[in-house]
Amino acid sequence: MKKLQILGTGCAKCNALAEAAKTTADELGLEYEIEKVTDLKAIMSFGVMTTPALVVDGTVKVAGKVPGHAELKTFLGSTG
Image (tube, rainbow, N blue to C red; front, side, top):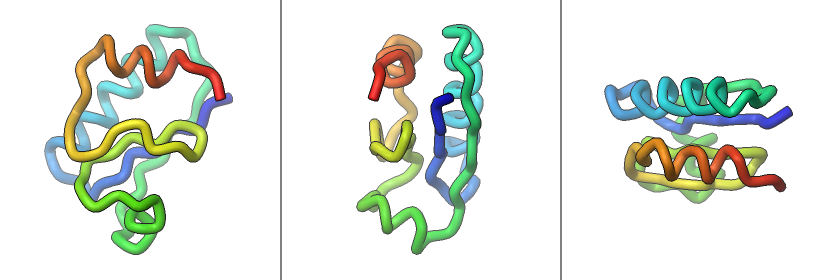
């Protein structure tokens, strides 16, 4: 099961990333859990300074933007 974390304070882009990640994970048929991380100290513990950010299984995949669908499929479809 993949652990997806959306790092952000709840802004429109953060919500868009959460929705896009969920939609893409469902499309890929992944088993996953999704968590929204809104605490600034927790976000900074990932080394992220710009939000939104996507973390997959503990690894920051993208920060500061909402990636496109194809890019999300790459991030979520990769193993590890």
